[in-house]
Image 1 (cartoon, one colour):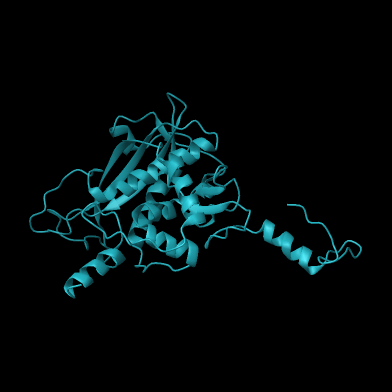
Image 2 (cartoon, helix red, strand yellow; image 1 turned 180 degrees about the horizontal axis):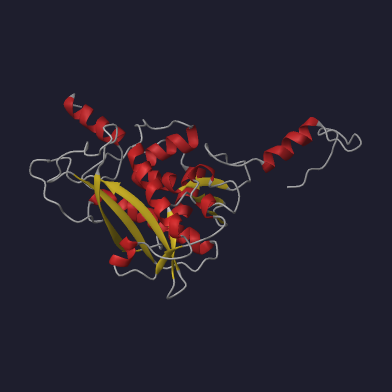
Length: 304
C-alpha cells in the first residue's frame, strides 16, 4: 500500500512526514496479534493453542479473537513445567553428541538431541511470532502466521531426518491411590487428542520452514508413582523430598492433512462470523468448553 502525500495527508517537511503519514506507516509495520483486525495487513499471529481453542469451541474462539474476551483461566501446573525443564537439561547434556539411556533402552540409540542455533527460539512460545528465527510459518493463502513453542527435536543419525519430541508428565494413580495398579503411559485417553494435534502442527510448521522432518514424532512421558513407595522424605537432608517417575517413549504417526483446511476455515470465520455461535459443551471426548457445559446444566436445573 503506497502512501502518497496530498492536501489531506499533508506534505513533506524536509525528511519529515506529517503525523498522519507516520501513524499510517506504523500501522502497516505493527504486528497483528490478539484481537483480529481485518484492516491490518500484517500476518495475523495464531498460536497452536488458539487453533486448538477453535477446534474445541468456536464461541470461545470468537469471543477472544474478535472481542478480546478471554475464557476463565485456571492456575497452570508448574510441576509439569519443571519436569519439562529437567528433561530438556538431560538432552542438553548430550546434545549433538550422543543419545540418552532411556532412548537406548527403547531401541532408539540412533536418536540424538539435535543441535541447532535457533532451537532456544523454537522453544519460546511467548515470542513465537517475533521473526522467522522463532517457530512459525506464514500461510500465504490466509495471511496467518502460525506457530508456537516446542519442547525438543532429535536427529535420526540413520536417516538424517529430524523428529519432533514433546515432553509430558502425569500421575495416573492419583484418582484411586488404594486400588492403583502401575500401567504403561499411552495416548489412548480421549482428552489426549489435543496432544496428537499439537504434534501434527509442530511437524507441519517445521516442514514448512524447510527442514527434513519425519512424520513420526515422539512423546517422552514421565509418570509419577506412589505404589509400594514408603514416602518422599527419604534423604539424609530433611529439607529435601523426592518423587519417583516412570519414564517411557511413545511414538506417534502424525496426520497433518487437516491443518491447512482448518487455517482456511479459521480465516473465513474471522472475516465473516458476525454473531457469536453456540458454545460447544464439554463432553466425554473432552472437546468443547466448560462454559457450554455449565450453561446447559444450569438451564436443565432451572427447567428451561
